[in-house]
Length: 234
View (cartoon, rainbow, N blue to C red):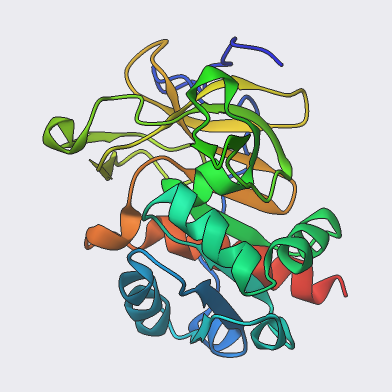
């Protein structure tokens, strides 16, 4: 893994050579069925923004709910609770296999933690064992990196592929990415040389912040564009 971040040519530190993602047509979004893991956390907000963008959005609580989906969102919340409940409801292995097989998955905040394959020394212990993860993305994530609930904050920064306008970012007990593997494209950092807060690896997309808590739908649209491209390639 590397801590070095390529520049995006806009003064921020983001993915080198990142493709400018064009918004999908509303009709294309309407043909997409996106699941949102609804075990814990702010899944309702993700569902609302997906529906505003024209996609069909459904709650996922059991393995059978994964059938016939085009993409999946892992929401923010508490990563230890999400991991424990995913194990109880038999979702850990199915989601792991889907993500490994090229299925589009987007994780926000706790969802980013769940998709990572390394938490370094910030991993929580559950019954004496490291917390359960889906473990599919080559990133090392630091939990509660900015502090506890009282240290939550809002800011904005440019995101590679989303145009020049900065994106509003809401951080709530947020993690950040400490290091990335060679296949990971950094999409956003906080300030020049700051911590990585958004990234993509093939079919996997993550953000440390909560775009579902803003009025800016560009990041969800980016995910829908990824899903549409994957669906066309089936």
